[in-house]
Image (tube, rainbow, N blue to C red; front, side, top):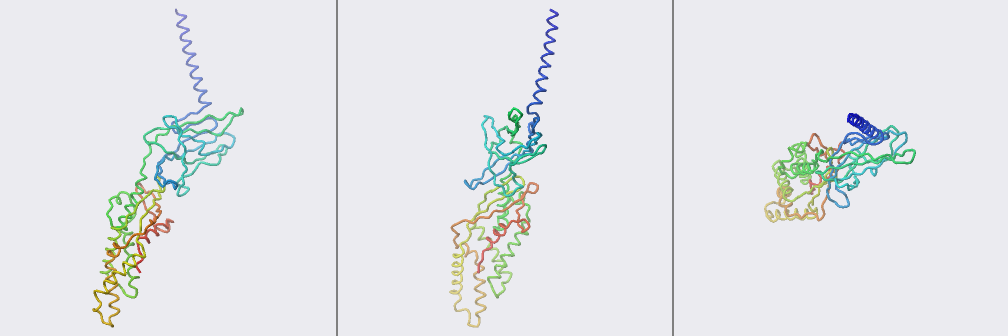
Length: 364
């Protein structure tokens, strides 16, 4: 009976050593590490960060959101290793493979594709994008192009991916641009401006008013409109824009740092604008055909201009819109949770100038 007890203890010790030996062997020959990092003797693989990106692809013209993962590969072998997005595979809870998505970023800083090769003892990083369900969990598999002396491929490394760790605020970029256009050009009080936009609405609105005032002065030619006429013109012009122009907004690309948002709207038909202006001029002529003497030609011309420009709301409201929409691709940058619409030449955002000019119609 005592011998049985001794043998049982020995068996327990032998079993324990066997388990430890298997664990140690596993650590040396296959992957090891945390949920976001795995390593083998030849290569290391790490998910550095994740974020949601929203893209509108040209082939379907529909906004779609993907999870972008930034990964780093450490080549610990003595040979150069080729690298591409095809080396990575994302699997869902049903073990179904999810293909990577091609991303056409606004610049290299926004999205860097994995490509090329990794030299021995060097690291390479890049981005991968996948269509996912934010409420599910996934596994990201990496199959290195490394072979042993027998021609066997290195073991696949696996890390866990939890999309719920990452916040998606991309829609705010679109809301921010809409709030900017509403407040600056369309005289609408959009509450999103205070919470989502960093631009100086008063400064940019004043710039728009100044340009409208310049347009008025150009229209008067040799005459100088008084401040009252200028004020009436700007107020009615803005009101007409508010009533007639109905922009739509679509995200071309957005992540946590940068966005490109497309503004589309039908502008006023220029030829019809001239016709409606002439109609208002004819109204003035009929009403005042016997009011001015021959010597008062200059005064009559100036009064006619005042009459026309102070009825800009009537003119614009009767002017038909173009058949086709115009579109303007605006760049935005995220600044501590709010968005800044890039408006200056230094920002290399010429589309903003085009948008600005589109709202400042030429009346002469």
